[in-house]
Amino acid sequence: MLDHEIWNAKDAAGEFFRSLNKEMFINQGVHIASPDGKALASSMPGRMADGKEIKSDESKAATWTNEVQAALERGLKRFGHVTARRVKTGDCLPSDGIGESADGSAPLVSYTRVMQHGLARPDCFGSVTLDSVILPAKEWRALAPAKPFPETEWTVPEAISRKFNMVLSTSCNDSLPRPEELSAVKFTGKVESVVDGIAYLRYDGQLAGAHKSVHGYVWTSEAKVVAGVGAYDVRAREMLSVTMVFEGTRRNSKYHAPSDTPERFGAVLEWRRAPAQAKP
Image (tube, rainbow, N blue to C red; front, side):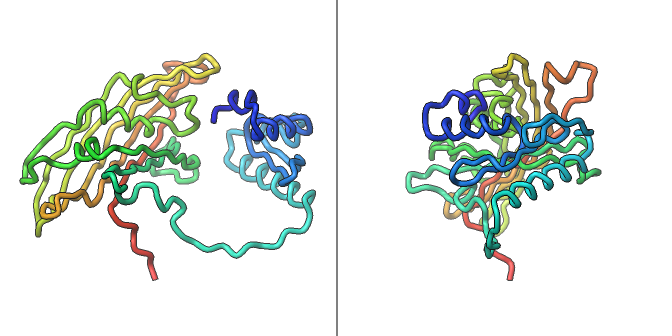
């Protein structure tokens, strides 16, 4: 949900959001409230703390870590004693990116994050943004080779490729180019080899597009596949896995002039037939 939508929502969520705003200014950042709707703490690192303006260096990762942690501690203190939960690990998205539905459709899941310095600086990685797209059976089959023989090549139809647009944003949907807003779209597949009845696939592709946000400025994004692989069971005639790794850049017409350094990001689009086996 976009920020302006929840501001104007006439449902319980909108009422909850507006009631908190009366107690403590909230827009972006981390906001903590009790189940009964009492505002406990908030943090917009470098800008606001509990509704009061502050000035600190928000460009430093330590600022975000320290101020958000402080907000969590303030909120916990104001809430009162909390019994620690026993956490059970597992797949946080057990239904996304795994298996096919009864109608043959398949859910592909995407992960995007800012990587301004590439893999060289893990401390500069942004938080992970999750998204997904469900391809109907007919469209899902377009990612598989019609003839699973070595060196077979094919092009994924443009209408289907446009649905991979979710890899172009590392934040909210207000910066995400819609499928119809893409200006460059192309995905191809190739059978690299067939071993013991399994066809090993390679994917290449690129996307580019622009989206005008509700605030009036324009986000432009582009990304290309730097590693795309898949596996197809020739005998069963079914896909086993798909993984595409993207590198991309994006700009904001308000904050990034053409001469400025654009935001660099990475993305993964994947699907597998069966859940990964848990390690003992």
